[in-house]
Image (cartoon, rainbow, N blue to C red):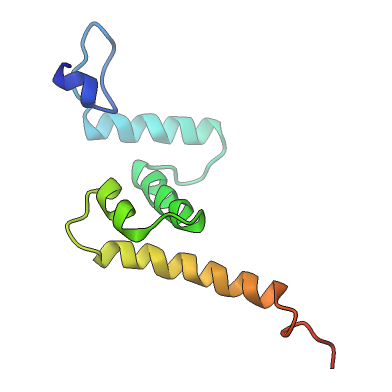
Length: 101
């Protein structure tokens, strides 16, 4: 397997060098504009992936590895956001919280 085969973002097959950050940022911005997604940038997709991973019962240790973080500090930030979602849903769906006494 060639090193370029391991990269996620590369140039065309005839020039498979790693895609530079500014080119990827410009590409995501253009696609976001066409899709009417405001403020589209690569890190937003990384953040969205992390939150949705936790919302779908992913574990924090695997997420840490997937994101390449050396410690759990940033992963804990994503966990807090996912827990806020959980608390909001619980308030909406809890039978006890919704009793009309």
